[in-house]
Image 1 (cartoon, rainbow, N blue to C red):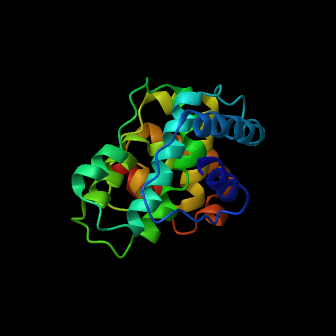
Image 2: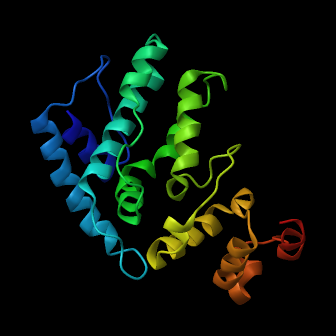
Length: 210
């Protein structure tokens, strides 16, 4: 089931999930990793510089997390205890490889937040997703009302740094410019095209308030 979910999500962005909780067996996980690595190879070609290497553990964890999250948005009779059993934090190292490999699936989180917009802000699922969004900032630009620290894992890696700033500019997410270093990177990326790429952006004001 996980492999079919991934095919639909990658190819069309539209998915269906069963109306009961699914256990991920070893065979399903192995097939999912093959699909995720294929997706990684294609996606890495679009990244600036050289993308981080593929981390199968991080990619598979993120795929399962997204699958279960979509199920939980629909199955609201699931208790908080079961929710915490399904949505477990990543227990591997937070490396550039993990950030990019997890992003293959976590990049869909902003869409999932919009999908779950009818849920109460106090809903345990929303609380869980906001915690996830704060920890994986590379994938969550555009999600409002979260405080994010980017960290060196992203900003020190040429490919992740440029891709992150590009995403920030594309989404015009002012709330993500939280340091003079980030502001400098945004300025450099916009260059002479600031008025066209981010109309109305007052970088001088931001520099004074950071």
